Image (cartoon, rainbow, N blue to C red; front, side):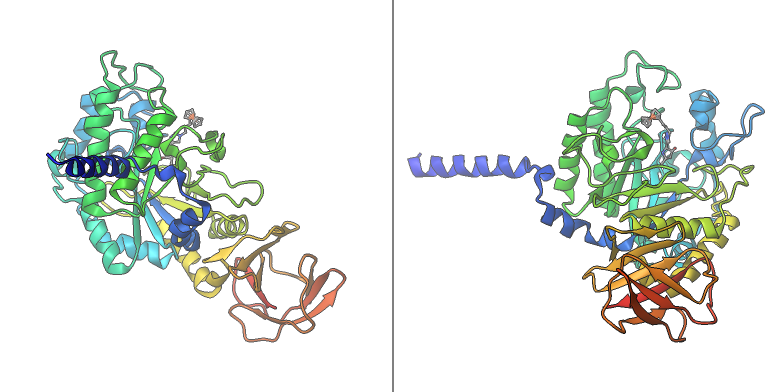
Length: 446
Ligand code: H79
């Protein structure tokens, strides 16, 4: 063989190896910003927790406080939990309808549980029979139907996927705190390489999710190194993917931001809470509409539309995203109380959405407890969002310096709004009549 031919072969192999091992965690901030732009701009998503836990609907052994954790919290033996699959027949499920509910609520993306901690899969997985196609009478691929519906409705779709799995024998933790029946023989590496990764590959190649939202990363078997390896594996399959920080071990408890620099994942995940101050990092607060994530038929702790809209405003002003959860029933319906509240949010957003979507946070993101600020991406327009209906005829915004007679308006109203520089801020005269409810947006253009 010629020397030059050998050299070429060597060069090709080395290039091939490097291409295989591309380290996606080494992206520049500019590259990341470009990849994350749609996600940052969308600001508001709808979370869906759906699985076999919808069958008991929160009730087991005389207790009524369960939901998606019921298998573990109420110590349901695996065979008994598995039998819920035979009763999972959500004939009222209509993917198009769910997507319309999200859209009507102003959500720009949906994240649904492909697999929660219980291990049950909502798609036709080739590596298990514990899925909606093989184990239930329903026999319809839920993720396929949602993928099609999202495509038809122009909605972005992502999947929540639990690393912890109470059902796969090789995933059962040796630690009884993390497994309903601990398995001392469990082979974690085998679960990772022959189950977790192949399933994620199925999800990416079949349904092309825009987001992968991991959870259950806290079990001792999972490491930051495994998280980084998985991150690279997934981004190599689809470089555009947006992935949360629970793929690694960097998450700081429920506050959800990272404990250390260069932790795996693209965004922080505060859970059931909102950051106390603004942040220029990527983050998303996930929250429930009532108390539980999965369906619980006795949970009537519905948050008011006022609270939900306030949370969205607070989050947008602090530079984050809001992922608001619904827990559909075993019949396949999103609870009407959730649908109503989402519709209220959507109505508010139809008028005021330009103060929320595709905006960025300001250093001064609030004034007192009833004014929040956002700004357009070029910084030329400022939105002052009044979360309480003002009682006076004017309001002074201390942190805004404007040109004389800067243009101002109240979104959803054609009445005049005038501005007068005052001290280091601006005085805004409000219209006599302030239409609308929940919150009022003053748009100030400089
Ligand atoms: O899917 C929903 C819940 O079922 C799931 N996350 C949302 C999106 C969830 N799982 N567990 N929890 C919520 C609460 C668990 C908290 C703890 Fe921990 C896990 C306490 C100790 C381990 C998180 C990680 C807080 C400290 C370390």
